[in-house]
Image 1 (cartoon, rainbow, N blue to C red):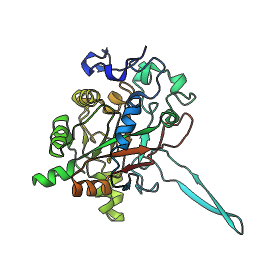
Image 2 (image 1 turned 180 degrees about the vertical axis):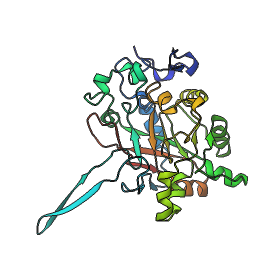
Image 3 (image 1 turned 135 degrees about the horizontal axis):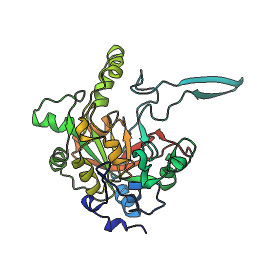
Length: 316
């Protein structure tokens, strides 16, 4: 039986998988659950997000689908536009990778080795031939709530500290807490963490020749993959974690810390978003001093999809 949202166990109360040396939340939201932490976006969380809209300003949080170009991890699509008759046109995409630009990872994106996908879902049900844990489950639930921007480069700028998002910089819970305190933000269960590392700003500022280097030099700032990060994110009750870097976690990272994607997606059921564009939201937040917003996303309704373009906006 599922545990109520207000009575979730703390991280250290979750069962430990001794083989992987990772804790898991399997069964916490129900043995048949397919959305994990998105369950935290209940009616109260949605209303709390809506209450953040005071000026009527809307901020796009997605890169164009053809960026990054060249792609950092996958391949570019081919866009064909054609005339159907003299008065109308149509178009289609070939080689369209769902996770090439600003993106969501579904819970079938990463498996916990021989133990299966999130909630112990088998490879038969969530592998290439199955349909469980797809991005369509996020769509059916809906993604709407209060977004909390944690602006790492802006924090360092105010402190007069040099910082480069294209280096292997580990963002740890104590830094996030310091930034939240500086921004005067108290988080609540069901908030969506919007982590700005400055990676997208660096990419947008680069010329075409420099952008090609991003594919070869993938080092970037991001969340530490150590257990402390998983403990922090779970205990803070974030409904999703979205970052502006390619992997949410630091690249290349420390092998001794493990793989944050495995800690978060199959083991804890976290919704992750990558390569989000927080630049306009960051500029406005620095101006008005308010780092919270309504966050709404509508992933593509692809049955069994492993991922989707972000299709996200913030409203203030």
